[in-house]
Image (cartoon, rainbow, N blue to C red):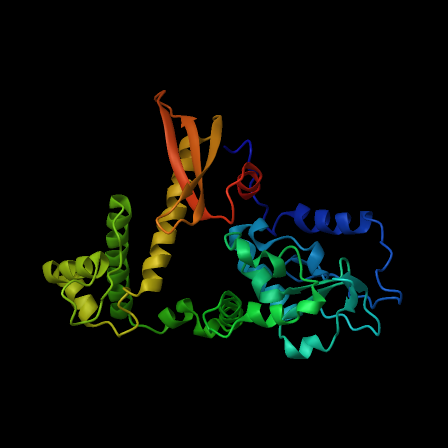
Length: 343
């Protein structure tokens, strides 16, 4: 497995900044796309050795950085602020037979908007910073770039009215990252040892619950989880059973505030995702440096939505042929070309 995937370098490696800088200096300067000479925004390398590319088109994706460095990269770009080009005459696109172009007045209307002079497209900085590769519908403002100037309403649609829209959640994550005093780590530092101990007990109880349900392929939620419900779903009922039969867990749950019971749907989802990540790591360790196959196929769910199924096929150290399911992802279509790109 490690023959095919190289470890991601850390910023402490001397090659990280050097390679990025050399790549920048070796590439020839392209002719500006605008008939006027565009303003120059210099690239930066901050004190921690993070190379900050000013043009969003040329940036590495966040998931390409080492996991332990990703928050540092996000914070560096947030402190640098979005790249905004101001020119009298932007490059024109012939869209639907009508010449249209970007306007710098859009910066005031849409926060976090960035302009790439390399390709004459715009991006949203928060969506780029917190894109994890899973949201296939969000790549326009992260990877491809948006240049349909006649569809300005698409910018507003992407932001969304719902505070829980993908864009607004990314903006909230940016705000949380810049305000570490409101983070979980900072909050825990203000707790007493007893409160920290109870918190860990509740967390471990919820985690054991999640591991049990995931291994059994059981549903977490119920259609009615109110206090008057006869059955509140497998997760809530299992936590209640632990509370009744374990005095320590019961006391920890009793002393918890309303938002610290570690039973909310978001907590359930985060713990399930953590289990998935650890499972994939275990599978990678199981394969080691041996040969393996990637099997990709289509599968429809009960609502007739198309899905892509990814399975690893290999021979374990006992000589048995093993297949491990890696994941199921919703796709727009299930043609061979689409599945190949998605994998």
